[in-house]
Image (cartoon, rainbow, N blue to C red; front, side, top):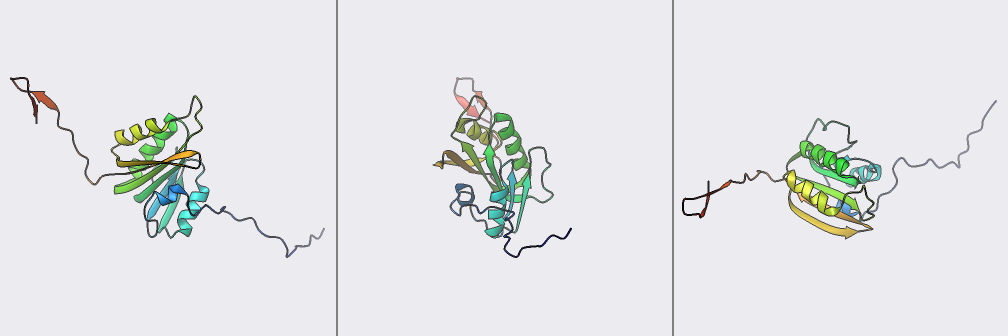
Length: 169
């Protein structure tokens, strides 16, 4: 049986066009020349947008994957749903990011009993050493961006002096 091939067939694009105004891309800082990783589900359009935006390298990781071989400057978590998934994704981002790297997390405003809230995500980010947290509402979600400091500040435990005053060190 012979099948004719039509010249009118338009191939479906591998990546759907991501909105140039996507807060995940805007809040992540400069993309051009950056090495980036997209962690978790729903990241294909973000990955393609990173490549179109001039990222030097971009990879997509699932929560069960290992850290990329090369460290990155930008980690994007496009769709965190549960506390467990957020914890794993943030931990994976920590292992992937260079000092002074950036993380951007999208948290859905649609809260169900098993979904994680913005407060819990910001708490997880702080627990993992991220600083300069910024949040903003965008398209039925909240986008949180933060930075990994060059140096982790070690908290000096407080101790009481003989007179009851707080002394540090």
